[in-house]
Structures are given as structure tokens and as C-alpha cells.
Image (cartoon, rainbow, N blue to C red; front, top):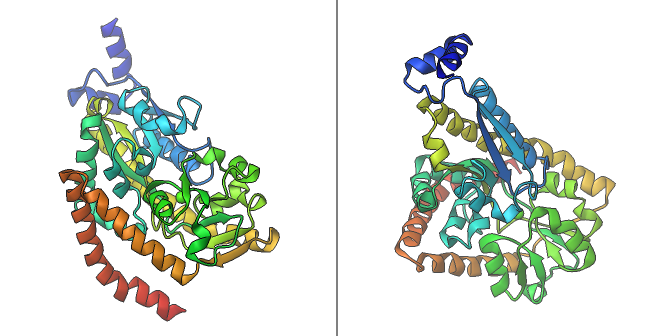
Length: 358
Ligand code: CA
């Protein structure tokens, strides 16, 4: 049986034969079938489709040696069980964002986004050339997971509100869906943060179960029809200035791959990391126009004093995580150091240019 399988494999061409020679007969000729669970509704624009593209790219780059079947939230596991599902090997890959796993580790939130923290470009600098990725890997190691950055939202919107926000007092008693550290900031400002997967936002807002919700940006928010459930659309997304999406990889499954396929999986994630951001850059403009012109959405800036107060609270909240344990301190210090250094450069490059451009 083994011999027949070998002959059939060898007959399929140079790629399979080359793999055999490279000393990985257990893998050669066998199609590896992986599952990817996601925290997004299936095929949701930008997020779900981004996960689909990542899966297709792994298949293409591997010449079909890895096949990846993608599952939307609730298809195989609920959105917030993606981390556990990949850790235990129910699926080999997962697509989501690290702040959803703050119940496992509050430090995980640094690897998605930090209120008033780094932008997408700055996050990528920290992760790939500033020591961030090494720390992220260290954090997930005990869970049997390898993280990869696999997408970025860019600066998000502050969200959809059914009441006007004129002052800090208007945040008091506000029941809002807002994940991660931003949720804790809202709580200290007097609000009630709620954690809900994307698929439940519209009905929660429409039924009045929540007063406000943030989701992502015009492209994604239009797709959910949130304009039908709330009056005001506020900016900027102080709580999510450039959220890194993640691909979770089951360590055992990854280590069973030959080196070239390991490199392909990581390279496909690196492409997704840029491509999802690029798609948002291309699509948000038309979506914003549709929201304003067709759906008559009231787009407003948050008042300066509200933003100033939220920034003060954010600094406290983020600094407190560093006191939780020595590893949290290490991540916080690395993040802060890189942030202050990159900010000095951003101020006289991107920011100065955007101001000059007007
Ligand atoms: Ca968001």
C-alpha cells in the first residue's frame, strides 16, 4: 500500500518528488487539509473575505499541498471560542483579533490595539521590526499557539450612538458594545461596556439592548446596516487607532509541516496583513459617501474635551495592565518605548504632511 502510494506520488511530478528527496515522505503527495475558524460572520466584507483570501493564498502558494476550509462564526465554533478551538486542534488556523482573548491574558490586547496608541503603520513597525512579534509569540507559547499578524483595520470610527455626545457626562450610563481596553476606558468614564461578536450588533442596537456600538469603519459598518439602528456616527476611533487582526496557528500542526510550507503559511499571513488594510483604504471612501449621501447619516467628531478625558483614562488603564505581572510589564515597556520613538518621527513625517496637505 505504501509502495503504491509512493509510486502514485512520484508520478505526480517534480514538486512531489522534490519533497520526497527533501526528506519529508510523511507529507509528500498527501494533501494537508486544514480548517480555519473565524470570529467573523461568514464572507463578511473585509474581515470574513480577508480570511477567505488568506486561505486561498495558502492553497495557491503551496501548489494545493495545503487545503484550508474556512468557517464563519458559529459554523464550527462560536466567535469567542476561536482561540480555544485552535489551541486544542479542532481547527489548525483561526482568524480574529487578540483583544477578544483578554480573558486568557490581558496582555494579549497590546497585540490588537491600544486606545490612543499606534496606527497601523506604527504597529507593523513594532511587530515586524521592533520586537513586538517575538513578545506575541512568547505570550501564546503556553497555549500551543503561534500568532501571526494577518490584517489591519486602520483607524476605526468611534461608533454609532442613539444619543448625542456633547460632554463627558453623556458617556455616563451609556451601554455600548466596545471591546478590549477601550471598553474598560468607557467603564471608568461612567459607561457600561458590552462584549458582543459582530453578528449580534445590529439586533442589539435596534432592540435598544445597547445605546451605542462601535464596529469598524464605513465599509464594514455599511455592510451591517448599522445606520438603520442609530442616529449619530462619531469619529475618530480613539479606542482602535489601527487594529491588528491575527491568524492563530496550532503549533503542533505548524511544526508537522516541512519548512517550505511553514514559510508559505507565514508569508501568506504577511500578505493578508497588508492586503486587508489596502482593501479598507480603497473601500471606505465610497462607503462613507453612501452613508452620508444616500442614508443621510449624521457624521460628527467627538468633542475635544471628551477625547481629552478619554485619553487621560486610557493612559491609566493601559499602565495598570503593566502592573499585573512581569511579562505584561515587558510588553508594555516595549510598546511604550517603540511608540514614543516612532511618534517623534510620525509627527514630522505623516502627521506634518497630512496637516500641510489640508
Ligand atoms: Ca472595532
